[in-house]
Image 1: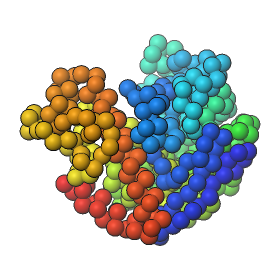
Image 2: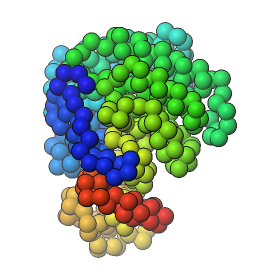
Image 3: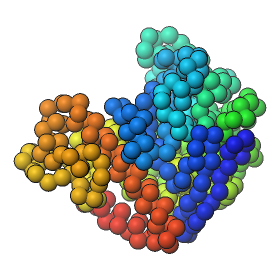
Image 4: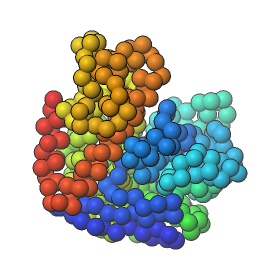
Length: 373
């Protein structure tokens, strides 16, 4: 890896592994979960609270920050670290996911993607070269290559011509990103595409590895395929990627999904589920998920989770949290988000400890049991 970056595997159990990802703004112990700070902030959670919850690295959205407040403003205020107050490592996505999520507002050609802004309707053009410029201005520790994330296809069949074309374009854009990226203090990750087709993903992984990126991500998954199938695709891609590089599964997010993917050799994760589900009253606990808005919690005096040390669990009852969430109180959403983030971050810490101790298979069995509740 370039500059001040390095990645070292420190322990393994089967394909599962722990590692140390060194960046200019700190060392990340992997496997690690990255809270999502779309506009430079995890909704309702301060940087100090993220530190308290155990976060090591945070993810921001390149496209949305380019739109608002603008990457030039962020750069002028010290990059993401100075602008937001989060002094630890940052990873920025490339805007590729918006190719799919804003598909009704986007037009793709070989040069890049043209969006009609959801804010003001103005047309914005994002190319691989511009995606690199924006992320370098934002000052992230890890930048992502621009990819074309195709919409979901039915798994199991031959890939459509559309999927094959998107995978090939992603490879061409990866080469352009590699040439355009000039910041020696910023790592650059490539992205494997190919939908739910193993042959296509293997080819994408092998050809992406030829560009010698600092790390590699699995894109375009979590769009309808079953977890077992997804893990098989991840393993197949890993066989074509450098074993000594960090691996990132983008946007995957239920606790059992994380543990299963760690078993397949993934090092980094991000997802909006912990905070989004928290705001809607779905709380993850050591005994399985609770739907706290349900009436049965109206007079429940118990803490949310006896095994958790977050503010929601140490200071409040389920009844109080139920009241806040049902009443739409901002405090309820904040406490629920903090709890779910703490649960996820503790889960990943437990995974690291289990791998080091050679007991990860037992942790995975417990995770599967809770997922069935």
